[in-house]
Length: 279
Image (cartoon, rainbow, N blue to C red; front, side):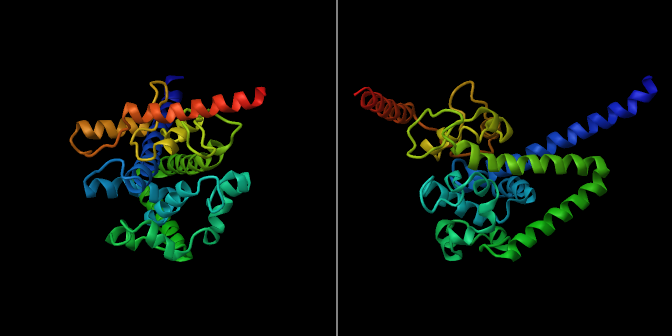
């Protein structure tokens, strides 16, 4: 029995190790790299480390960093209003995947240059595409395929299968932020944010902290999204570790005053709503 189970146990452990490594690589590539680092400038990292982390997002089919950043900045500017590229107010499936096929209707290529003007002149981001064209999507897909071929050579089929499962999970969990975390029927609001953004615990677990979405929309530049002790935020733990190692600089955190002001506003609005309902 021991001889029979040993190969099985080894396979399980190997798969688990590759899955965890892949999940963190691709997940942090999106949450830390594309989102908190590039989009919101919540933290500064050495250029080589920035590229390395962001590669995880690119190889999770997130596409051009500059384009991703420009779309996300547009989302913040028009969150749950007309012009928001992926609000579930236009339909759940639209927010989940449909918006990707019709993003030109919300943002022109010229708008990308305006929204991501801090990235368009970077040679690496520029080479990965600065438009909503099919060519930049094809480049991303080709790069993803080449990466998995290399992974197969290095780690064999177990590594590839584990990576693909992790990548698909990370990809769709990111879309859950666009959908579930903007549904009034889910989660809770801690702060006033002038939209439907919600904190949803299970999305936060899947997305390494991005599911504390109401916190994020209320204080977008904060490097920390899980602002309560029980709001688990793996991306923030990673930033904190990098800061202790001397790699992360200019980490942006909200002051107690700012958080109290945001909470006070939502409390006042709730009080007004209850008073109106009682009349």
